[in-house]
Image (cartoon, rainbow, N blue to C red; front, side, top):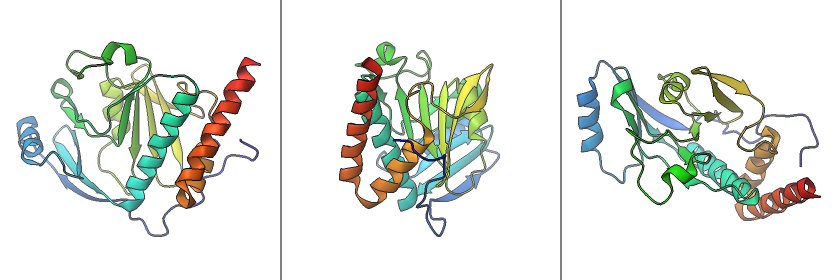
Length: 222
């Protein structure tokens, strides 16, 4: 599937329209929890809190589309490789002991799937998600790498509308890598190709991705 040098996603938005953001500062954990509890469960906004700063993000079309495309890519690849997962979506990841909380675009249990399958996760006792995906097309005031590293998330994908950056946790901090340790057969270019195609025709893009990952697994077993 990869035939050319890695290039960025070819169809980024011409005008940045990924998110509207509001940042509130000097809040306590209790105040953050009050705001979180006052908001409706069906809201579109997402909250990120770190050491007194609360960022409320309202995703727009370009953000939501990229998030859903990446989620489709992950699930199709995982299924094709026979990898089980538990989807957490944008579940609130709160860690009062770290004075941090977040509602990522997507989060998944993969390597620790068997520890949380079939039940609700308790973040006070259970391990953090194995993979978190964040789409930030516009500037964010919170250092999400530090936030998820503190939480112990093993792998972080960040997409800015053009480039995907993959980080793995090593010694308490993230190191950028070119390939996902969870999906080593996949290169960034494969995701970019899928995004380009899905922007025009999601149905066909998903069919082609399924065929491609099936071919990859066949080549590995031959």
